[in-house]
Amino acid sequence: MSDRHGMQPEKEFDSRPRSNDPHGKTTLLCVGNDEALLSYRCKVLNLAGFEVVAARPQPELKNQFSSLCRLHGPAMAIACHTLTANQRIHLARELREACPHLPLLALTNGALTAAEAQRYDVLLDSLDGPAELIRQVRCHL
Image (tube, rainbow, N blue to C red; front, side, top):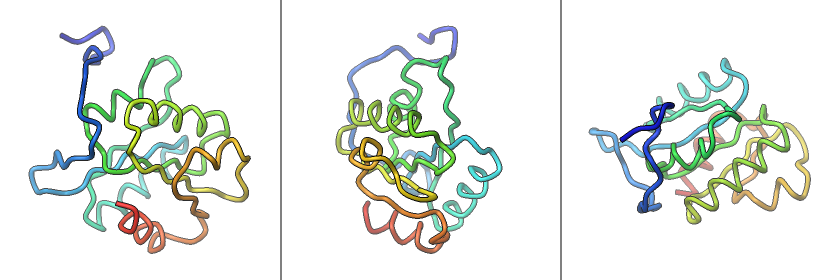
């Protein structure tokens, strides 16, 4: 049964990454505010062989990211540099509670605050480019 937002009610779930794609692709969750950059990153990661679920933060949706984790079972979550510090902290907190073993990668455009950085497994400057992003994702899966 779904609620009025089409979300399934909370239930116990296996937080280990899995491949939901019929072609066996690894699923990634990519979160950012800029739709054009999010679309570009998704295309780059798709071309590298990943299935990508893109999301923009919607504060009105309670547990948005944990719901996406339950639904798609990503192997990693990527926080784009377009997120605010508060959004980045909220994303990591919600995902850590729902999927404690999910690797979290933060794309940055400079230094992060200590509160942001401590919540992520991998920090990568967005200027390092797509090849380095793909390398880091593969390295930490």
